[in-house]
Image (tube, rainbow, N blue to C red; front, side, top):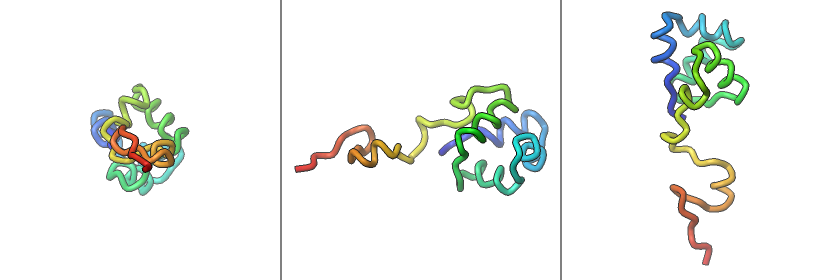
Length: 86
């Protein structure tokens, strides 16, 4: 999932370690989010957005994400188009 964590964190002038402390996680976890290796829980996403005084949607860019929702995957939807099951 694409995100603006690094941009917003640097704008605020805080380190990964400091952001981690503010939201109750490690520097390594923040790094994994910034580099898109991991995705946050909804609660962590909310806490991060609160630190930046932004909405979750302004921090985490869902529309730019390659990952499909579980619902779409189970329905066989690819890029918003349902595949023919015949």
